[in-house]
Each structure stands twice: as C-alpha cells, then as structure tokens.
Image 1 (cartoon, rainbow, N blue to C red):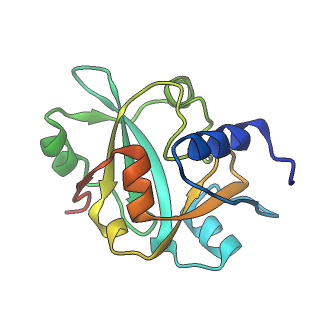
Image 2 (cartoon, rainbow, N blue to C red; image 1 turned 90 degrees about the vertical axis):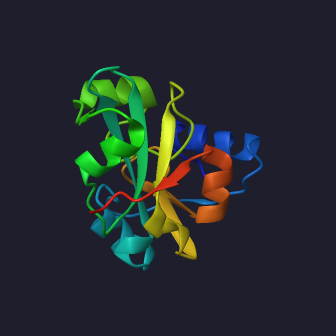
Image 3 (cartoon, helix red, strand yellow; image 1 turned 120 degrees about the horizontal axis):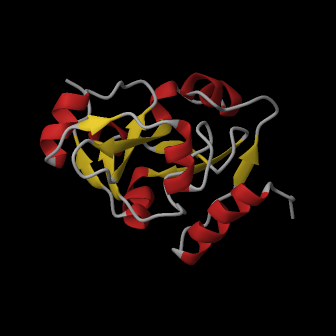
Amino acid sequence: MTILPSAAEVVRNTAHSAGLSIHIVEVPGTARTAEEAAESVGTTVGQIVKSLVFRGKDSGKPYLLLVSGDNRVHEKGVARDLGESLERPNADYVRSVTGFAIGGIPPFGHAEAMEIYMDEDLVSKGEIWAAAGTPRCVFQTSAEDLLRVTGAKVIKVTK
C-alpha cells in the first residue's frame, strides 16, 4: 500500500466511508492548477474538478463550487442561485473551513459542512479528476459518484 500524506489519507478514508473506492495518485510535480493537474494525469483541463471556496457576503457561510477546469465562475450569476452575493475569502478562511490548503482542496472530507454546488459542465464528462488533499495528490472518479458523495446541487457557473 502506498504511503500518502495525511491530508490525502483523510480524503481516501472519507471516500471509503461514503462507499466510493478511489485510487489516489501522487504526481511528480504539482497539480496546484487545473492545467498542471491535466498534464500530470494525461487528461483535458475540462475534466479537472476545481474545488473553489467562496464566502456568503451577508451570512459569512462557506460555499464550495466544484467547477470544470476550463470554466471561470460568473460570481453574480452563481450568487442569484445561492440567494446572496459571494466574496473570495483569504487562504486562512479556506483552510479553516476545509482543513486543506488552496491547491489541494478535495470535493469532500472538509472540516466544516458547507453547501456544495457542481458546475453543470462536469456532469457531461466521463472521467473526472479532483484534488486529494495536497497540491500533489489527485484521484479519478465520475460526476455521478461525486454528486452522490457530496450531495452537490448542479448549477450553471458560467455566463
């Protein structure tokens, strides 16, 4: 069995507890960006899941957006779906609510419960790849399995 960083073990254990069997891959460089991750595993940027944390401007609560790697979030449009404006939080906030550093945030296994939304463009992809707790660890799954494990609501994140 491969020895993984403790953050990646959290992701693997959370997946296992949810009935999802994943194989975590530790890449030689980093997978901090969607482009780096896609190059590392030999897939398209659109098949990379970006786990982006936002904070509600009024409520202060965290929201997690699971976004296709080639999409950019249209914050005003997403805010209409969420019912409040969004702010981009600092790295300390992100680490406190997720338990992970930016660049390695997985789609599940977070320190705090939060509402999760999935980019509708990810649903049509076959194989998708997501961060596994560190900027060097990723795992492959399907949008169907990710929706089941996260309970995400599917929304349009682009204009």
